[in-house]
Length: 336
Image 1 (cartoon, rainbow, N blue to C red):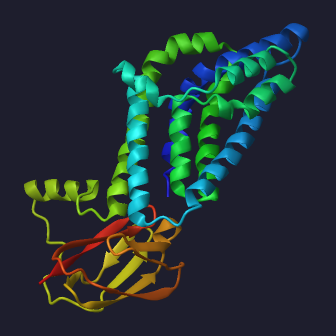
Image 2 (image 1 turned 30 degrees about the vertical axis):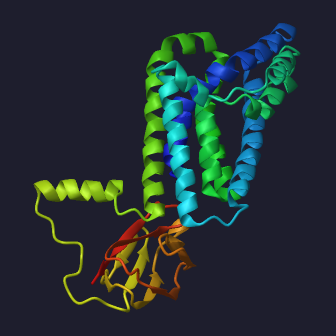
Image 3 (image 1 turned 90 degrees about the vertical axis):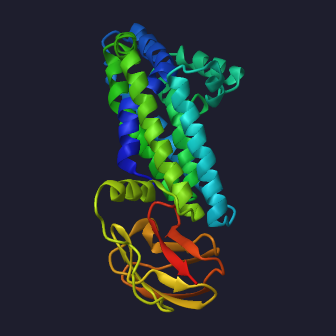
């Protein structure tokens, strides 16, 4: 499952500024028009109407994107390829923030010009409905960071998680939009340079996390965790992770909040394996266990135990397993 705290922080630091650069001018125009017509009015109701409408539209969009990601019953490896492309898109978005090369501007999707002109026209109409209208239709003028979050929402393959991703992101952008009541121009001029680097850094972190999930979901023995373990064991003594005893036909994997624990990960090639899956405290995507290379999966709800039977590959080496989103995983070692 996506790390909602990272997503909130991205909205708070990166999304607020990048979205203010794209949508802030429209909101400032609407607030100025209302202020001109009603000088005694506070800007707070207008900003609130904008944010509430924006939250509603983005929550709905996230649900639709999550649903679209679940329309087809995709194999774990196809899901992994999709996550890989999304990670590349995120890296391109981050590099566009840093103006590394003009080619990366193509990673920022532009809405049709007629739609942008129409929304700008509505912003000049004034009244509290103008900010609400801009917020509702802000999904059609997304900033680069929002586009990265939209891709992440689709990657969840779940309407509720897709809704959560975009909702948490929009909530994160709220504080900076409230500062529009002071001056959007001052905010942009003062903070744009520093926050551009932070925005790129946060999106890059999300890209790395998703690429690691893609590798895990694909069943690759090479992941960030395996690389970190290898580097650590190169400079420091660490015990072997592979059970040194005899190969087993009846391994047991225990699900916990932190992931999966295998009692004996050594299995023999070509043998029929009766795997016991016991979920003691694992919630979220940990409950959806899969062995990508074999295309098998089993949902084990919290507090239950299930058995999964499969035939070990004929090739020796690592046989990876993970949760349905590649966030948690491990491996068997297939021996002769």
